[in-house]
Image (cartoon, rainbow, N blue to C red):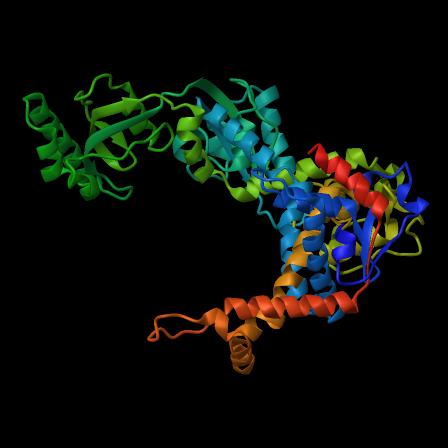
Length: 562
């Protein structure tokens, strides 16, 4: 039996407390090492991870290895290895990475976002928009003014049947609206900022959105049309430049020249040669006018629409005019939208990781609030809405703490936030706009505060909530300690202790004999083994190990079926 072969004291302790039927086997104490409990679940987990599928590891022999491992870790703890800053930083780093997998659904959320982007990529939308400028850091009073203005403009469009283009020219803070009436042409996914894109793809043709907030201000969006994606197109072009400040004479000269080149093409002249010689777009001219693949919305609308209208390779357009000048476009190749797998890598490269992180965080918070029965006291929330003003946010005044209601603004699980705690948070943390009204700002600040609170609570309870997490963190904990103390006690010593190496060699000369007298070298590994054995012998004498025979028997039965 293994227990008779051990060279240090093992006390078999059988106690009814170990066999509580209400407790799962994993949580039962299998052994203690120097008084520190080791659960059966930890032993089972490590045994299964080390088990060779081609052979059967005897439980008894593995128990020897496991105990030796725990003895080394115990020695590290006894010598304060777990109190160093380096150890704590390394363990906390591992824990932080691992905790994300248990709190957030990053992988699932990424897949959802990719699928959503792909579905949108199959459609092209034509939208009009009016912008009411309002920086992201605007005070609530300024945000409110901009929000009201945006709503008034929308009311004119929806109720007064005002013309969108004329209203955009009159009211939009987007300077391009003077020329295009707010029309953005056709575009697809990733061509607009995310809040704008989300709003556009949620509309039906002809529908006008409510004011949409972005870092630029409030957008009023009208969806004009939605059509299936036409994929990508590859073209060559000849361009004669016309800049915005070009005078009418030079513009007329450019138009005359593009018409001359078009006439030469109709007579059969080489498009590539004419582009190389006469095109003002020198980058493409060096390649015979060839441009990279592009889709709808990636080129000026007039250019894109003309390119996609060409049907066969080699077809070329009549001269067209864009904001860059005059162009003749020749179709080289077309390709339809790819499958999800075809363009997955492209979608991944275009999606902002911060967006996935934020979506995953919001999803986790909503799930946890439901799990923990999160409740807000609406009466207290209303008090904050009615007693917070711009002067307070600017730091000119503070809340009158005598008037703040005594109680909890919200509760969940065994946690709470007092009204006073939230008042302090509002006073100290406001640094920009959280909404278009003061009431909305309070709502959003509460959302930020409670989200961080519930995530911190969940993080602090992961070891208790998930046994797998607890065991993994324990593995990291013990593994770091084992590496650190083994480095000092064995590996570094075997390289630095030249006297010890010489003494070891003299005691074991016969083991190192060779018929090749010219061979010289240092034998380190054998000395490492000897140091390790010596260390283990000392640990067995120093630290008492108590194994619960009954729990070990239960563990053996469980592992027999794994």
